Amino acid sequence: MLRIAIIGAGAVSDYHHVPAIRLDPRAELVAACDANEKLLQQRQRDWGVEVVSTDPEAICARDDVDAVIIATPNFTHRPIALAAVRAGKHVMCEKPLGLNPAEVREMYHAARDAGVVHMTAFTYRFAPSMRYLKHLVAAGQLGEPRHFRSQRFLDWPETSWGWRQYQHLAGAGDLFDMTIHRIDFAQDLLGRIARVTGALARFAPRTETKDGQACEPSDVDDWSSILGEFACGATGVWEGTTLAKGYGRGGFGHEWAEINGAEGSAVYQLHEPNTVLLGKTGQDLAPVDVPAEFLKPADSPRDPSQGEPATVFRYDLVWEFVSAITDKRPAVPDFYDGLSAQVIAGAAIDSYHNRRWVEIPHEPR
Ligand SMILES: NC(=O)c1ccc[n+]([C@@H]2O[C@H](COP(=O)([O-])OP(=O)(O)OC[C@H]3O[C@@H](n4cnc5c(N)ncnc54)[C@H](O)[C@@H]3O)[C@@H](O)[C@H]2O)c1
Image 1 (cartoon, rainbow, N blue to C red):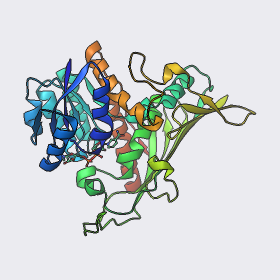
Image 2: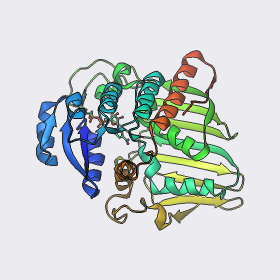
Image 3: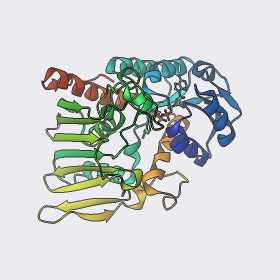
Image 4: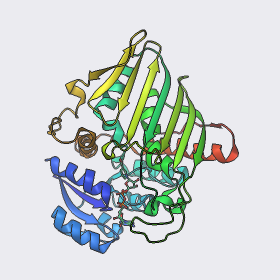
């Protein structure tokens, strides 16, 4: 049995990681860590976990912990991941892995050199429609890929985002929270991005919390966009915003990602993750069911007909992490993928500030 500790017992751990551990007969939740003692006590009761601590280093040092999942605010990922790796623990870390490429490069090198399994929580790679899209591209079903296009539009309140709205804690806003996932799956589908130019904007000052308390204004983007060229020659366009009024879609927002190839187009949408839109030249895009083999990882006991489709594929992250450890192989996506996406996001920021395109050097493995 793989003994997992959760570090950062906030929203994503409660919604995704703990239910995923519960679903996996090969894994158990043995410890939880959070800086907020009150929340930790509540999680101890709700999650039924015996060992709790407010100290991530103490959790990482425990002999009865084999692997950790880091789901804390972005600025803490680096020190906690380095502590986990030093203690020889396998580590899955939430995205963005860090605040900038230099931090993330250090994390990747440390995990790689320690020989532990390392994984970046790039959730949307696991959507059935995304897995099928990858298959369609790799099998040449769309012909030579020419364009990648991604839209992530959310209608979020304009109140405070807490730690997420400050550069020193989050690194960036929409770009690191949302667009970085889309950078990752674009590279997974089409290979390395060779050059980018980016743009950021902030519209909402966010000087009030949800319950009306005053707070320091946000200094991060709430809209981000990237124009890019892949090494394969395809073009890429990304746009993300949290200010798209009317795009609630039951809390999931609007997500559209597509590839236009020389012979056909294929579309992924988050709110319909078990369907892709497909069209060959001369046809209109039409829905096609994702074949059963792409609905979940092959050996996973998860029943894909159960639960909210736009939620349940998120449990497959933990399945992959545990499978990689059990099978003694690298996890996919790993810290290298986290670094690769962080380099692109960082280059988009540099490009915006310097008003120029940025060439992306090849990052050695
Ligand atoms: N992959 C995804 O789809 C996805 C979705 C949501 C969030 N995330 C990522 O997960 C991370 C957490 O996001 P969230 O929405 O759960 O945030 P959150 O604010 O709800 O939870 C973070 C928790 O970490 C705790 N914490 C802060 N500093 C700590 C420290 N030093 N040690 C231990 N605990 C500490 C906080 O008390 C809080 O409970 C972020 O990096 C975010 O980008 C990823």
